[in-house]
Image (cartoon, rainbow, N blue to C red; front, side):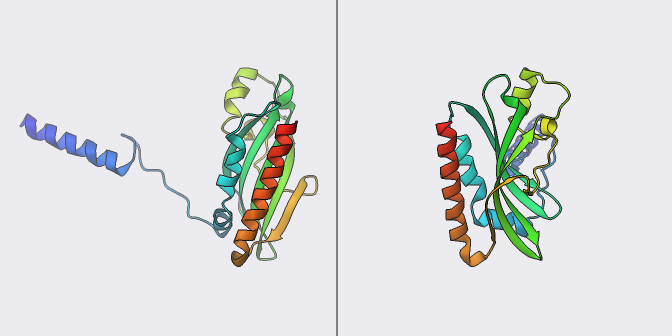
Length: 183
């Protein structure tokens, strides 16, 4: 009967809402957490960097944070560029990377400068795309800092010192925020 079908449909809709997935879509599979991901979680990297993007700055536009992952590293980064038509030419990343060195997890907090690498620049498309990711225009996967980058802090991650690591990150983010507000 029609009433029974309507009741079944109604119950199906309620079940899908409770499962939290959109109609017609599979549930997104979450990647298993790596030791590097856990280290970043333990120092609250994502939330600490998110504080930077919740503010409006006079001279820069700041985006993120975004978690990134490579074969032997994980990171949380925010990125910014100067306001104005030519501000796109250099993008600055500030991030926290958890990566291996000699079978130990290291935490690196660094600032990286990325030059614009796309063949053309369209301000309207750039403005929308840069809010979600920087790879399209700067052709960089956000890997750990190297010799050409500004290393702000590097240490071995130890679980028993996670609160010290967290405080160090907070201090660096606070000084970086003051630098952005002053520019």
